[in-house]
Amino acid sequence: MSTKQFLFAGFGGQGILFSGKFLAYKGLMDQKQVSWLPSYGPEMRGGTANCSVIVSSDPVGSPIVSNPDILVAMNLPSLDKYEDSVVPGGMIFIDSTLIERKVRRDDVKVFYLPATKIASDNGFSTLANMVLMGKILKELGEENDETIASALEKCVSARHRDMIEINRTAMKIGMDYKEEA
Image (cartoon, rainbow, N blue to C red; front, side, top):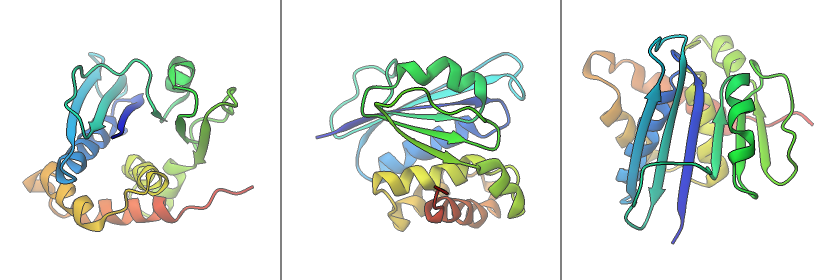
C-alpha cells in the first residue's frame, strides 16, 4: 500500500502543528498507521514551526520526513527551505497570499491557494491552515466527512468546541476552491 509523507511549514501562530495533528487523527480514523512530529522554534508564535506527518497502511519506522511527498508552505522562508526536498512527482501547496514567488521546479504538482485571504474574507482569519487542509484532502481524494468530523472531535479542545463547525466550513471552502488560470 501507500505511504504518504507530509511536511507542514510556516511560522508560529499559523496552525501548522494543528494541521499536522488533524491529519494524524484523520489517518487514525481511517485505520492507518501514523506518525506526528511537531517542531517549533523557542519563539513559538511568530517563530518558525514545522510538522512532519506520515500516514501509511504499514507500520511507520521513523517519524522523520526528509523528503516529503506533500509540502505545505505557509510562508516564503518555508518554501525556500523545503522546496527542493519534495520528491519528484510530489505536491506542494502554497498560501499564495503570503508567498508571491512561483515554485521553480517542474517535476512536482503545485497548488497556489490564497488561503490567508480566503480565511480572512470569510470571517475566520486564523483558519488559513484549514482552508489549505481542505484543498489537500480534495486533491488526495480524502474528503470523507465522517473521518473529518471524527478527527476534528479528537483534536479540537473541549473549550473550543464551537470551532469544530467553523473548521469544517474552512475545509469545505478549500475543497471547493478552483485555481484561476
